[in-house]
Image (cartoon, rainbow, N blue to C red; front, side, top):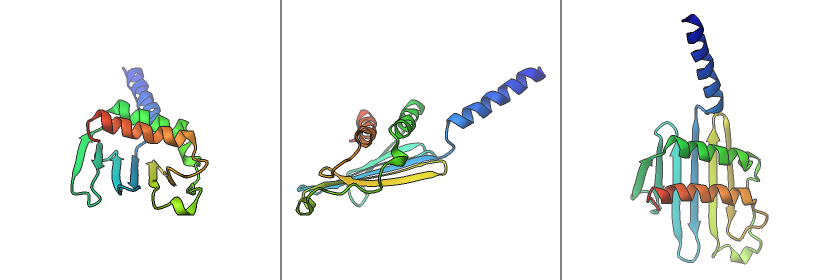
Length: 146
């Protein structure tokens, strides 16, 4: 019986190493000719995915995130090397800034926090960053929030 309890404690400890105690992100997309605005955010404390297409945040939609969706996102941030992306990817031509759609993504996993900013006209944006934001949008779309 004592051996079984010790074994369970080891499993709990191993699982806590793989699963962060704190995880959050905020993805913001804004601008363009139509002056679009979209915010998709998540915080593991509330476990709610929150989406708003209103700059005031008045029209906020929120739904719980499944454990598998959370794991998929954490894996995507890690495998696509998000924490090593540049903080800013500049637009190729200054005069195109008023038509560009700006994006920013801030991610916190335990003690690691990183923000990166880019536009749809920025140069050298890593494909992994595009894949991360597509995954965020796909999860929100799958929950019929976007």
